[in-house]
Length: 186
Length: 215
Image (cartoon, rainbow over all chains, first blue to last red; front, side):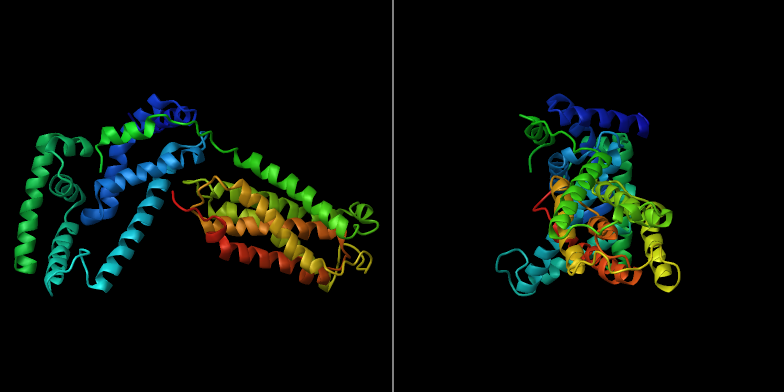
């Protein structure tokens, strides 16, 4: 389906959903779920993303569904809600992060002195390396190694074959290994 | 975290109808007529309108001068409701177009101060509390529009807040053209200035006006 055709289809499904049609709504959510996930992975990067964020964004779409105007395209409305919600989530996470750092209690538990600092440094190093990867490779690593998806599911999300996804992961590993060895001495 | 299927099932089971909101043109028309009737009524009760105000409207320049803020406020109310729809962005050009009639109205008043007023300035119909009336009554119109937006999720709060404030304050400001004495300098300081103050206040207070616990 072209983008316009897809939008028309979503528009129709959402309009029916506004009248309480469960089947149409189920179809719509099923179709937009991977789209929202892809968008969030590309926007939030490796560590900002997790599956909960996608589901929270879809709950927001559910809560705001009456604000969709059926005479307008669906995708801009959907992405506006997702963008707003994801920023909201990031702000909340930042507040929690800052509080934990300020309290010196990274995991909410008492930890040996210096342990959290090391963990945080490690995370930053890996985060930097991941961020420097091309988008396609980064998403492949995030979906399979961080999100724990199967190659098949990740390939479906990325809309590529399983073989192509494996190639991306393998290339990403090579790049990551080189970078971590060269830049950070890991 | 639940699986994708379970999650979708949860959202779709017992799905309640959620009809979309009325279209922005309908809601802005509803808001305009309601606000005009209520504010006009309250102002009339406080003090009847200026004698001969209707005859004054036969003067073409005065008529145009009075219609300019009306055009501006209807456009601004429409834009306020439009920008309250997620994903709708109003171009800068349209935003400027909405301000043009208001700017022309102010320029006409400034011109009146220095050289050619639309009508012969006079003290007939002077309202002792016109400044406070514009400042206070605007909030009734703000309240109406906030009620109309109560089910909306306003993401562009500052922009919507500015349009809400200016559109709302422009109603008593415009009514003062026929309700209060006509003198351009007085209109600028007692009718236009408080209207602009309301516009600034609603812009600043927008996060509160359109606050939602969660989306």
